Image (cartoon, rainbow, N blue to C red; front, side):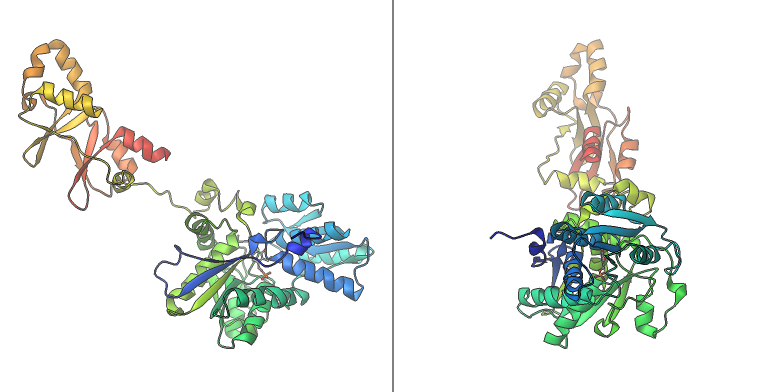
Length: 455
Ligand SMILES: Cc1ncc(COP(=O)(O)O)c(C=O)c1O
């Protein structure tokens, strides 16, 4: 099939089963993977709908300029429509947004005006106010205003909702999505609830945003508002696209839990998604753990792609700097596990001749072996130490191992971390021993530590 323009490829994104991150949860959990849209986010859907509706209403005329306040994804959708249909784009953006998002918008021909994040929405410097001002000053321009423009909700009512209903054969019982402008949650939720009034919707909110408290108390509490890092959802305003009647409950997610959730989706499911997708996952699973039953089917909307967060969520140093990632040391257990049961410990008996011990070490390619007496580990033979001794006494090879051996290797706990293991390995201790859960003994050398650090 040939599409007439890239705009015609928007929508019909896949629904994918989550297999690993859902461990311990009853029921089926699925993801609606919105990065398959050409602008790599769910916002393509409402961008084209807002422009279609503006053209139909006659407010957007040929050669016109589209001005919008956007965290990036709506801008991308609008820019693609603008390229396809010959409009200009100017976007206002809060300065907390990632540089990648700004660069991406510029790449598709848009102009970007960066505004301060930490000012009131009605402050003349806010990205909402700057967008309005530009709209007043530039002739033949429109300000779609994704927050209050109900074409946003309509796009998801007309596309996302019906797609999910069809893709799950009407079996969906729970729908979870982040709430920013509210379009992707509320348009989809309205459609699905019309199909199945018992369907439950879970809105994902962030700490620093007003939604959850407003839903629960009807109070718009300014004290709930504070700067947060997650991009794209949670608000300090009540957009018209947020229809609280179709959101049954809200769950708040921290910046850290969202970031870790995104990394889990990438590593455990192969879904390289954005930060808010991780928040959606974390919040949805929190709800699912307590409420989902065996036959329930939950769909989580994952809004965008991971490339836009490469310098943040997917950058280990950035994660550590923000306290989101504790340094995780591997342990002796990990080293043993990495051998997949393929290691066998070579030992020599205290009564065997040193020459035989050397032959075993040569054959097996090892530099040290533990010496055993029955079931006990009583000493060790270390090739580096032997060399000196044998040069001064060539007859040594005919002596018993027990007469020339070095001290026994140290036994360490199975959960000893790499930093502990490496501090124990030195001139005097060339190798360490560890017993696994089945009491089998394994050897750990400096080489094993280096391999674990660099793998
Ligand atoms: C990355 C990301 N996540 C979530 C959302 C929230 O979606 P909605 O505006 O439909 O509520 C947006 C919206 O801009 C977004 O860009």
